[in-house]
Image 1 (cartoon, rainbow, N blue to C red):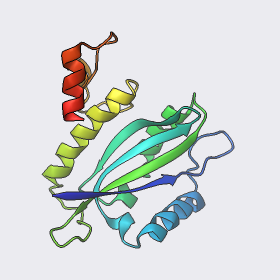
Image 2: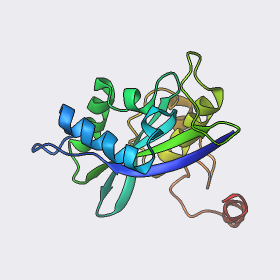
Image 3: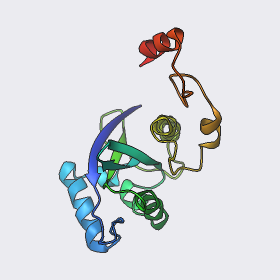
Image 4: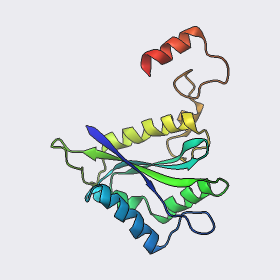
Length: 174
């Protein structure tokens, strides 16, 4: 199972600083995506909503588009609400990364009525990785266990000086 990364693609913001929900803004966004690759918007996989601010890019939401395309999933009303909650008290540029599933012959995989198990697994991995960078990640599903799990230098690293063993372990796996 192979995946490829695309983006980041910038969302237009409205005057209030939140994601512009207008039809024109959505069309502009998907035109940029299609300029990257004509078929990308109809692909499936995982996606990451992030905000680029002075201190760099911070992940805020990891999503799954397995039963429907990125174009149908990423601008759903409840997704925009999540993005706007993340943007509400922060300054920065809203971004979307698309992580596309590929077929054996290298084409974009199509959404399926049963989804894609590999994409579901990838979503969990990405949530765990994003939680390590941002403990305020907006995801609710699949996070309860990951928020409690603590493995030094892997996930939810304790806020203390790492031991020599932990540092060596980190060098070994990362």
